[in-house]
Length: 250
Image (cartoon, rainbow, N blue to C red; front, side, top):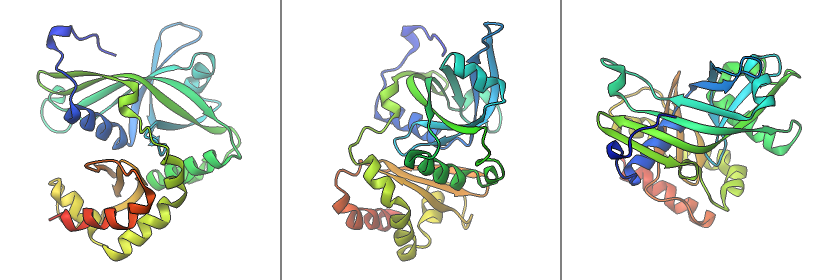
């Protein structure tokens, strides 16, 4: 992570936290640095990224890959996310996250949940996701550096990127049915949310993920994170709170 002089860092506010979470949860892939156990130097690779229902980044790895062997020896890793866009690539927001890798055991409900979420984002992974040497790793954020644009640098604690809610697992169990019900009543909601973000009209967006802090949306290879104004605190309010979002969108 970049060591920015304290004088150039801005105070981390809610807007910075929201941008950091959005960058991380909208990323379909990332540059990942690990420590090469033989050379002792950082080694970088590109990995597909998903998220767990608590917002922790997740990668699907093969036991044969060099970065998996490196993480087996040393769980420290860093992720860099953020699309460069047009023009100067340094003018666009990006997020560097220091992480610790955690293994997820196969043949567990947690693994199945990650499999469902990952395939909703990366459908082509179905070709290899169930091969015996593949497994999921959670990359738990420890700290982060956000560059929001020129002269907009922030530091964040790992917890500021993670959803801390006792409803996370309970909502994960009903998320799919809840989204299907919402889209059945408001079939154009995802397109209207994307249009409100100036991403164009009629792009065939759909919501593929729901957690207490927001929606995950996809259109082809494009991903979008929509954060709620406030986290869901009571599952009994889902049926009334989510339609309110639909009615507020232009």
